[in-house]
Image 1 (cartoon, rainbow, N blue to C red):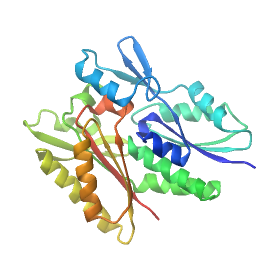
Image 2 (spheres, helix red, strand yellow):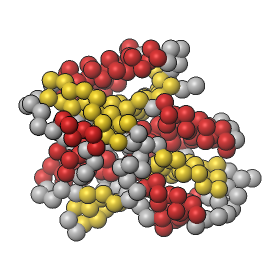
Image 3 (cartoon, rainbow, N blue to C red):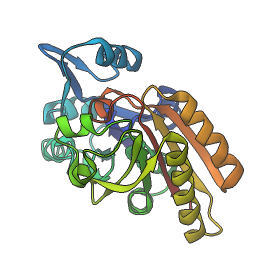
Image 4 (tube, rainbow, N blue to C red):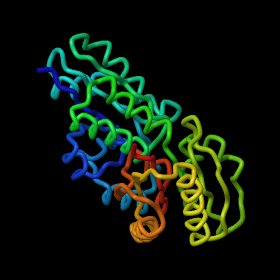
Length: 284
């Protein structure tokens, strides 16, 4: 009997236990420090990455998986006649989605549907969870795709960075370049619009930034009255901040569930230590 599989990339920042629970496979991007190349989550783990980012004198870069990398993963999980829902990092930020599309054309016996989330970090991960949950519920292919695309379309994204310097250096700053050169202790709150990093607001200090993010979630929740929200909270070496806002979210909003995890090397390269991201969508 033909099966449906869910694949994502390492930019999804899904914790290992969550991936295993939902049966989600991952294609890693690579991280390069000078001449040293590592596969995210395979050759380099989160703690090692941030330690090297803090102490090293070389700014790392990322490289998308090749179509051949995707083919290897696809062939390892699927047989002829199976379907793969492949959920990926914004095409405005990476060529990962395009590699998935090319790989699909190389495997005509497997039905591969590539989805551009126009998002990053657990924004990708939440869409992948939505797909995998629908598969577990034995929904047909078209419904799995519809559920995934609905999660993508309704996704809310807010993230706070300690500095815009990493986004600037790696060429991912997008429309947030307007915030460069702001005053000391100003914490930029950013979002993603059409897959591009976009300024949402500025706040003086971390506490006010976290409060403003909570206010934005409250407005979103009011617009989706009667629906519980699934949250993803990711952090770059800022676990205390992640746990604090998770506790506040549980008290204030109708929560379906919350997934908390670190921002891995794929995204951490671009946002830097101290980043906190809150991502969410309404569960139907």
